[in-house]
Length: 88
Image (tube, rainbow, N blue to C red; front, top):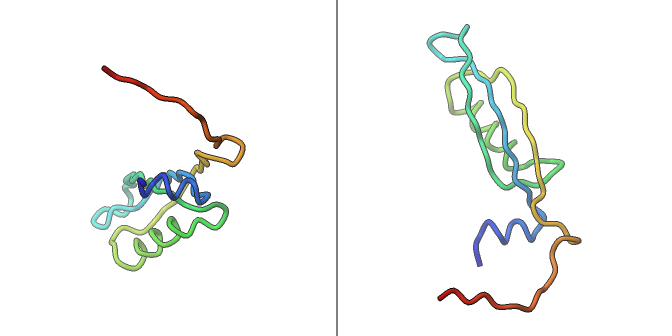
């Protein structure tokens, strides 16, 4: 089974973060970074871990982080179907 699909079944949703950070050599200039991963709301351990890594290991102080989260599969949307697709 696909690892991403397994996470969705376990309740993970897709989290996308828009990160603005200061360039190390030019602190007055902001740069954008987009991060996307399957994560668990409302605590967001994957995103928090990434931001902790950023602050500890990377140059370029964070300015702001905006994020959205979408649960792709929920209990009401998942159901077993019987069927077959024949291609060729």
